[in-house]
Figure: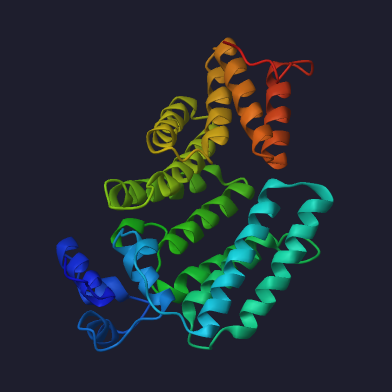
Length: 322
C-alpha cells in the first residue's frame, strides 16, 4: 500500500465529504495555507492537522505529524491539564480545590509556551479556565459564558447558537459548545440548554456515527447524557428516557462506558417520575455502584442525594435489584 501524506488524506476526505477548502479551514488557517498542506508544500502543525481531521470526522489519533520540542512540551502539558480537570470534575471538597489549583498552574505553563498566533491553544486555555474557574472558585454566569463564546469564536468567527449544523467542528469545539449549554443549565435556563444539547447531539450523530473513528461512543454517549439530563431537568421525562436509552446503547455497543453511570441515573429519575418506582430503585443502585467502582465522588454524591430525595432517606443504594 502506498504511504499517504497527511495533506493527501485531508484533501481526499474533504473532497469525499463535499466540503470546500474555505468551509473546512474556517477559523483555523487560510485557504491558501490549506492548499499548500493538501499538495504537500507545507506540513501542518499537530494542532492544525488534528482540527482539520476532527472536522472531517476522522480518527486524528491514527495519523502522525512530526512534533517540534515546544509542541511536544505543550502536548505533555495538555495531558496533565486534562488529568487534573478530570479529577476536578469527579472529586469534592479539598481534593477538588487542589485539582483546580494544579490545573491552573499547568495552564499558566502552557500559556507561557503559546505563540500569539496559536488560536487553537488559546481556545483550549480559555475553555479550560472557564470550566475550572479561578483559584477562589467558579466564575459568575456572564463571565463564564463570555469566556466560552470568546473561545469558540477564535476558530469559528461567526459562531451562532441557533445554527450549529451549518458548520464543521473539531472535538474541542463541540466540547466548548457543550460547556456553553451547561453554563445556561447552571443558570437555570434549562430549555435553552436543552435546545443547544439537542442540536449538538444531532450534529455529533451525523458527523461521528459511522465514521472511521477509534470509538464513536467517546463523543456520542456524553452528548446523549447531557441532552437527556437537561430534558430531565425540564421535566420532559419521556423524551429524556429515550435519549438516555440511546446513550446506553451507544455505551454498550462500543464498549465505552464512562457516561453509563450518569445515563442510568437519568433513567432512574425518569422512571420514578413516570410512576415506575421499582425500576427506578434498580437503576439508582446500578448507577451508584458504577460511580463507586470508578471513584467518581461527585457522581456518587449526586446519585445518593437524588435517590434518597425521591425514594426516602433510608433507601439502601448498595442493594442492586435483580
